[in-house]
Amino acid sequence: TNLGDRETMLRQAVHAIAALGTIEAVSPVYATAPIGFAAQPDFWNVVVRIRTRLNPVALLDAVKAVEVRLGRTPRFRDGPREIDIDVLQYDDVIRSEAPVVPHPRMHQRAFVLRPLTDLDPDLRDPRDGSRWADRLSKVKEQAIERVADGASLLPDDDG
Image: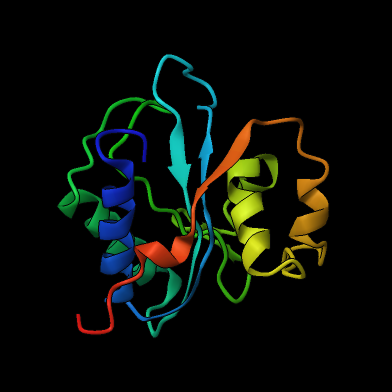
């Protein structure tokens, strides 16, 4: 997210994702400069690991519906957005029109790899077995700054 109250938007997204399964972990929140179209605010990024009964296509449909509920307005590629939720990885490699899992460009993006490896430094790309943490060290320098603890985004125990 990079529009409006980014912390509130992330909190609402995490709460909506909690309804799709069981949240196992939430990474710290990172601020990163935009890639591509630079004339926009920095993005706030977080990775959420969930256990769900949804298959990958149903999960992608569900998170895209969350985006719509949270007010995502279609603009242009790499432009500003209220929220953007991707399915980064599922138990295996999935090659279909949508989704392609692992996300096809995640290995190039520190804003994905840093929070992902915070959750699991030994997590591997199912395509070739390489560690995402090793890929992070090869990503060209991208400004990334930790801005919040991801636990602050979780729903309260009392609902």
